[in-house]
Length: 101
Image (cartoon, rainbow, N blue to C red; front, top):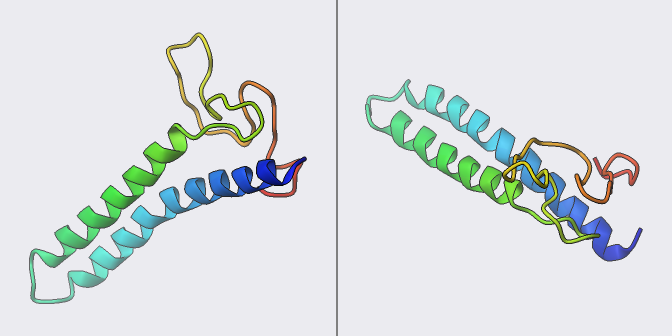
């Protein structure tokens, strides 16, 4: 494993984690914001965090493998079908084996 592969896998892991947790945190903040007198604040808080999470998840869906350069989670020949996974669908570079996941 090279240094660039390790850095690339760390970036992929970060996108996957933050993209999943930011909307959850936003929901919690929106629920706390309902305690205020402001009626629009919960909607704005959750909307912003959901948008940020959506951008990160979209970025994760199109991230390329640091080893082979192919889309990390896309299947070839299936219309670019994407399903979250811990290893590259083309070359098999696995985050778990590299002690990164």
